[in-house]
Length: 626
Figure 1 (cartoon, helix red, strand yellow):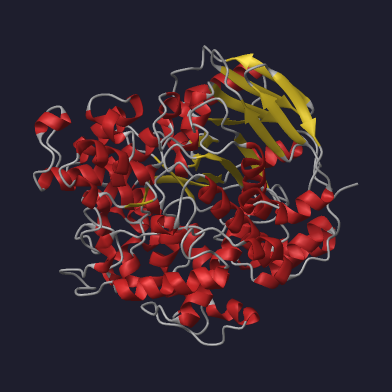
Figure 2: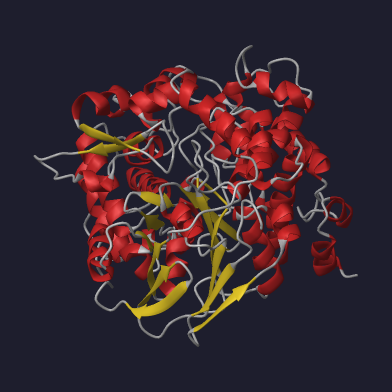
């Protein structure tokens, strides 16, 4: 009997309605763990180079990891992947909640969807029973309505639903895949892939369980989390959610404001997590087995009616729809968040695309003739709300923004591409590299385009007693300044990023305060494998290298690893006035990082030698021949 996985991958071809089961074996799961690693494996193995991301030949893969659904904090996550319609490269997003656990309990390690249906359909998975059902009655409906309708239709309130939303139906290039209504696999436009396949939803009900090798070892980690989660960062997460640090970031000059022109927002206090707690918060939500309960549920009943079923703004949302658009109206931000969750939109790309348009309008590069009569100004909450509606429905100027800011800028011309804040076509998250330099390196080199989760946040490593304590097990003995980009910081960035990609393979939340030894113990306890921290690091490094290999095969090179110019331009005012990421330092850091990772300086792809060292020689043969 396997532990931590079922050795069952569900394959569904929507074109011919064929359903089959694949059993790749234990060595496969020990190599890739699930999540990101499993997704990269199948995209490289089965997708032809140049595949249209919105065509039937793209694969859409739902993949929990080996710890998804294990009864300990942070284990309620799963990954979704495909070739991205936003970047044209490796697409991967991760979501919390309960859907991944339910899929695990139904006895499945992953779902690989190929082909495309002629008419809207949904999948109904009840343990081993899998059906493709008509979804015409669900098409065009908002996420909460769809979930309610499926629970009623299937006669079970305990089912879990993952769905593409109206934005996915309309193939908005940054459409999210929503589960549990308020949880999003938000980045890289995976909802558009789901919508293009006319797969409206996947409803799951599972009554089984994953076998665990050593309950005592797992219980020790789970018990520590239960008893200690209120200490430090996770205690703040419990009290005020991920938005709790927004005001501090503004005070330090690290809050993206008005399309990253500034790092401090004069109305930050109005949209911070503490204000949310004191005003519109009505409940705290959580993900499977997690005691932190960092999720917000908010309610507004006056100007904007906000239903708690859609949750509440995370930090990224408050930044993207708030400060990045110059908006200090918490109720408007909460309503914008509700619209994004109801329609299935990535709040980061949505907010940054709108901020791009606002800056271009204020600079005279866009006019009312371009925008259909809309006057786009920073601080205009109603315009932000209107544009979210128009993006999701691809109406008017929203149809252009639905392509993402880079494509929109290329279509408009007039120098508007200068103000599109992106890497590889994906909009920058709400973390400012000018106060944490290696973050800029991570943005530039991420195979998914700019991402803040599998990335380093330098400020965590500045002081004794911080994150550097855990990194001492990997040989980092002294704290490093946030504005350092020397060789030791580059090495720290490499190890940190490899380790964070591991989380996306194993199905673990990155906010959990486990140290590396505890994560090793968790994997050992779940699987029974004699895994070491070294092996776990290699799982993350392998998955990252495979994603880079996929991008190389799709035409990406080192020239695509470029952070926005704005971050090498000093702030003109605020707490970080005069601060910039020196362009020469970034160039040197990129060269050194490539060398440390074993990536070719010209192509940006992993070398054959590094791929063989990582145990995936088949990828080297795929790229470079036998």
